[in-house]
Image (cartoon, rainbow, N blue to C red; front, side, top):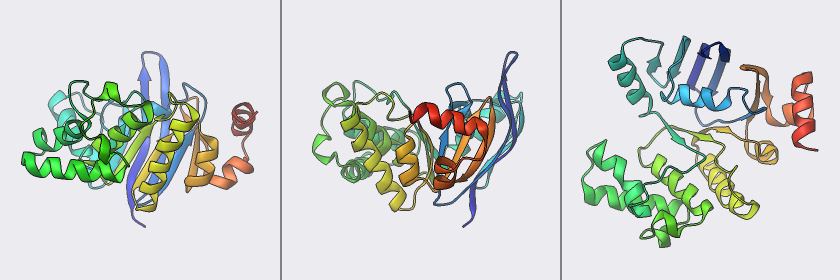
Length: 250
């Protein structure tokens, strides 16, 4: 399999606080990578750097053929970020749906206004994507009329509408109750089965064990352990990983 996402020597500071301390990582096309670790370890920041939402201080990120590097030129930064987002889409913990738009309109919005897709075609594709995540019957519903799990599945459909090669998912089940989590995790498993590349920041260790090809553990801005999901979760070799798993699985 070819490498789709490559992170080399990425460092990020917020003031004196080092958030990413030289991250090296490769994700193959069609692979599912789960990122585990304590809060504040740098997981969400790493996703935001890959998606071009957060600038970093050193290193390089490649997504497909697009290279993103540190720059002080705002225009260059915007162009690189825009190009990166043609390859990777992102789904957030808090849905970020437009409250004044229906589910269908939320999914069709970016293809119409960013990619210039004709409205009729964009709406047809949006309906197909809502069907793909099991929400065809809720196309006319507004976000206030949807459950948390349904909102998150609309957000996944919206990210897919831009036809990315990979999805970055940032703790997208953490605000949901167990039943609604199941809806979203089932959708992710289907995307994995369909061959979508997934990078998931999650605390759902059971889901990572079941659905991820590999697991990386981030702590204190560094990847302290990386390997096959079952090996890392069931037989961790690093003390930092052992302590984290003992705490979350207790």
